[in-house]
Image (cartoon, rainbow, N blue to C red; front, side, top):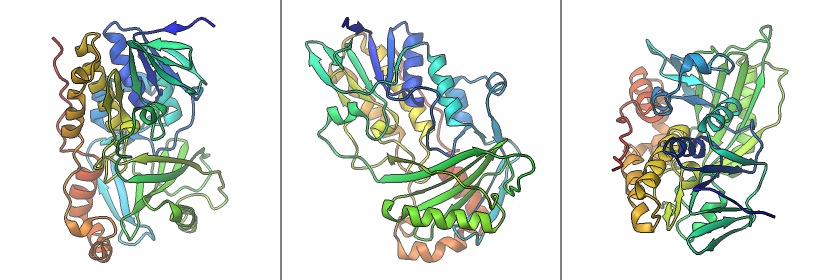
Amino acid sequence: MKMDSCDVLVVGGGPAGSTCAWKLCQAGLDVMVLDAAVFPRDKVCAGWITPPVVADLELDLDEYRQHRTLQPISGFRTGLIDGSGAVETVYDRPVSYGIRRCEFDHYLLQRSGARTMLGTRVQTIRRDGDAWIVNDAVRAPMLVGAGGHRCPVAQHVGPGPAGGPLVVAQEGEFAVGPAEAVAVAPEMPELYFCFDLLGYGWCFRKQQYLNVGFGRLDGRSLPIAGAAFVAYLKMTGRIPASLSWRWHGHAYLLSGPPRRRVVDAAVLLVGDAAGLACPQSGEGIRPAVESGLLAAATIVGARGCYTRDRLVPYEAQLLERFVAPRIPPFLSRGSELGAKLIGRLLAMPWFARHVLLDRWFLRAGDPALALPRVG
């Protein structure tokens, strides 16, 4: 079998891998994206993007919405998992946009301009002189791991810390007809938090689609907690009582110590492979996109010399960029005091808006991404 070759091989075609490939292609590099899935494919995710993501990706929202789901979000309903203390926070502008990951990821991959090898699992990774050989089929001097929590490139780069806390999530997304009773307003996703601060559930209508999910740090309790959450949503009429579906599961690492090794000679990890999801919300699209952009800038700046010392600035950029927001100790996960106070705090409109949403979920105070200059 004749071996293919490229300048950079990206393993994983999600937002991190596609964004990195997009910028590398713009710089004139020959890029191939390899993924075990065939796109479009489903992905466990509530599915919304913030304005900084739109800006970083240079998305034309009018063009994107022509053939895809794009739901402006101008508010949130937040409360405890049993619905108590619910507060509605309304903004005077869209603060996020609901997307379907099957559409969004496919769009980014197609737009990247990279060659693709889809429906192909990584079986072997080996070093041959100054190049990586993957599956004895592709040869590349530079390798980017973008394959999520269990990315084969990340496993090959080890040993090293496993990463920050592991979140286990399950989600279902399905079409709902106009006649079906759904109390959730399309522009106002709903978030319901566990009393022990170890997870939350969400219910989000995106035009004609409904997305319901639940994520926890304690994976063993996820099935029972998720079932109870769905029962609450049906009992309160938030989703149709007759609705049934099959959960889709996923796991990912939150940003924070211990951190995975993200750089090695001729290797960079991005997105969930690097363990970069926001620690308070679990949101991973913005870290995925930003790490993809930083990785691409680092690779272009290395000018074909992919020694570890030329790539290691990327690690420092991630550490500076993805620092967990400081929270009071009593609100840390598993805090007995936090469990007693969380209901009161969530019921306070000021806390719900300025801390829970603006600071933790929307990361509204984060500065725009500044890419390193190449030259």
